[in-house]
Image 1 (cartoon, protein in one colour):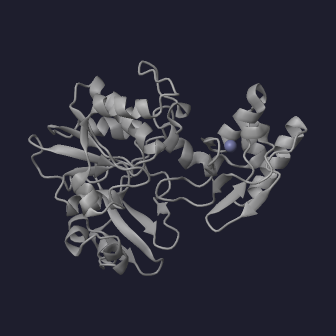
Image 2 (cartoon, protein in one colour):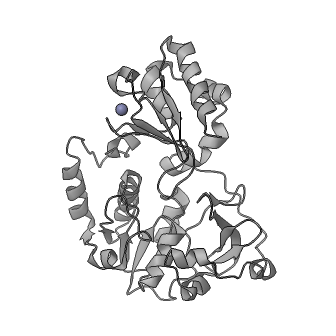
Image 3 (cartoon, protein in one colour):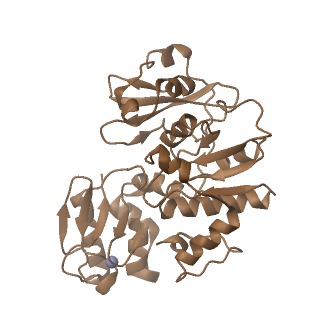
Length: 340
Ligand SMILES: [Zn+2]
């Protein structure tokens, strides 16, 4: 659990290693804990300017640090690497702070190319009967501008017992691999343990895609919104794993429009996916999702006005915006490359 205790353990661990107190000031909030920044003023600022996410939000994973002052961004490992330098020992950190399981999802999202989970493809499909029990159009979908028509298309349902939106994740033949869930209360996504995420929404694409561009988005809500706008799309249920990138290649489409969220993780995801697709000689465009927005959060007006750029044009625009950072496209991009 990411809570005040977690930060206190982290603070004590760092003290045991360095003899110096970081996170002197810790303030608990509903979704975030505010802490003094571990980076600027050598980690000794007086008042908190750094937020630590307690829960998974649409754009940010639980356990994520962000300093509103100096821009430092990262997870627990990044914090410790920054402070401890060469003394950082991953195994020791995992055992002392017990963060291995909690960080799993983050690592997968942050570094999917380097970190792949074992392929535990379920041999059993979810039955039609199980799916039937969730068939209910929730008011919550309406509040997020997802119509009943779209809910029917993707078989989006609702589990009354748990207050979760449900959505069957199908293989390209329509077999249901798993039921994804998203809590209405805390906005967390849940997938069955050991489940390897495929590209979501491939089965629902038109049978012939050779004259269409396929939009690539992060979350299911973004995909359902695309359907409202009559666009073909698929969702990565994150920012894309290696398996998913390979699966994208198998969609026989005219090209791709990358439309990940308007934040640094989304921009980095766009770059990672584009790099892969371009290597395979695909046509790649980027939809310029405004900062702090995603396809679902935008109004239809914003969506209509959203600029679509050829990948390299977008890349140059973005890199000019962050021109204090050097981008080297011949190297694998590291997280630090895209902190804004
Ligand atoms: Zn800072």
